[in-house]
Length: 126
Image (cartoon, rainbow, N blue to C red; front, side, top):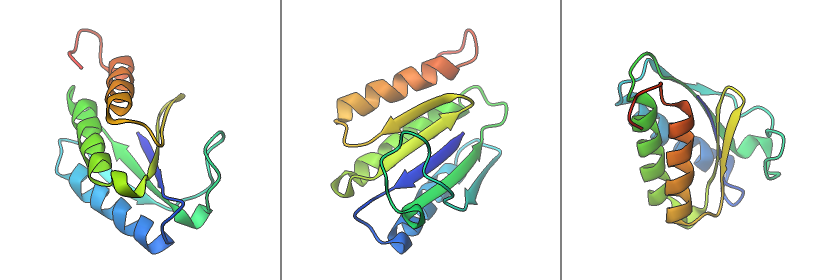
C-alpha cells in the first residue's frame, strides 16, 4: 500500500514529522515493513499542494489476512487525532485509490470500510 500525506497549511518539516508519527504507529502492526519515501510528485487528480509538503510511506502488508484492516484502523485513528489540521490522504493499492480530504468521520469510516472490503481475501472478514 502506498500512502501519501499532504497538509497544504503545514510546513514541510511538520508534514515530515506527522508522516514519521504515522510510520511509527504502523510499524507496531503485523506488517512486513513501512518505508518512508521521498514525497515525489502529486498523484493525478489530487489537490495541488507543494511537492515538498507531501509525506510518503510504502507499507508492505505481508501475508497476514488482518494486516490491511489493522493498517486502515491505525490510519483512521491517526487521521481523527489530526482532524484540526485537515491533512489529506491518498491511499493506493494497485490501481485502486482512496483519496480522503475534508470528509466527516462517518464518510471516512464508510470509505475505509469499502476500501478494505475490496481488498480482503476471499472469505475473510474485513
